[in-house]
Image (cartoon, rainbow, N blue to C red; front, side, top):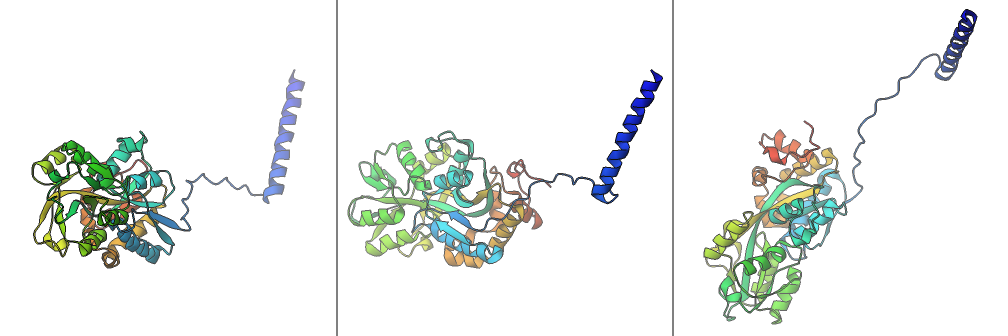
Length: 345
């Protein structure tokens, strides 16, 4: 038995020696430890696209200024795509079809939580907030002489409400229904709706966007307008039913044809991006927006509201870590709710 154990020990020793010889031959006498696994590095896209809304609306013009800023600070070619608006942008960014987009907080809330028929129950949680944009105002108008002076006069009328995926296209039909106003709504891009109104196919028109809206000014250049909002008891009812709407006033100076302020409701806008965009890229984009606000304002006056402190308007939507880094760097405090699961201090 002892001889067998000695023989076995000799075999084990021989195998060990041979192993050392092979290792020395392959590694020059030194052993190199295997590198520790590291997190996969996110690559910068070669190009990017911003989801806007219909041509002629505030989103489309604002996106043009934003794309110029991105190209200036990152060197990445960035296009603007006409989409159905916030609802569409939530879908497209969530699915990774677009890197960037713009949304209002109402559709953002519904998209994130998978609420509303348009979401089909899909929770669009791949979307991250980047920076605050501006206020969207609910705006309504008719041609003078049409007998329409307020939202209550739209009963039995045909009204344009913007693209189906836009803020107006989503909420203006709901607002009419909630107020018991039986009107026929028509969805289309704002430029198309202005043309239809001019041709007599619509009794009135509406849109929800930052001010001024170029298509509204175009309509006013054709015929005298009666411009109104959601006011009084109607305003109170809508704000109580959908808290992401709040009371607001469109100042007379917003449009040349206005002689007095117009009471209505408003909703905030936020720029968004896909959660998998590199942190350093998003940081550069957000920082670039606030350091080049003049370029944004040149594209559309609504960008005057694109101020870093307005990040406080978002109290619930998770932000991209790259954006968080910028806002913390300039000393702003963010709500705990906006820190996403992937955030690392």
